[in-house]
Length: 92
Image (cartoon, rainbow, N blue to C red; front, side, top):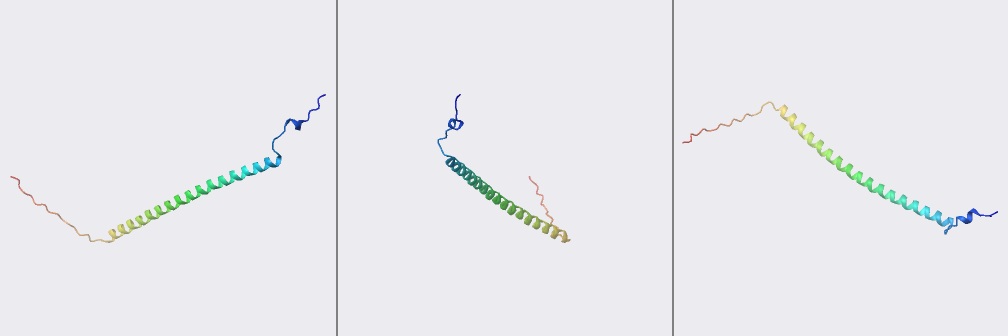
């Protein structure tokens, strides 16, 4: 009978502690990278939201001015009428 030790078939060139350290470092780098990407995206989203709010506030102020102008036009019952008379000239 052959006495084969299964552990001798899988000889690792690195210790278990080294592999655990490499796994931890890889996890930390992935975590930090993902957080940086999320931070950048969140910053971009906040910038776009601010731009949208500024645009909406501008639209609302223009709508308010338009409503006030329409209200002022409806309250003014006397509107002056301007007539334009054109002279007819004979061309000979």
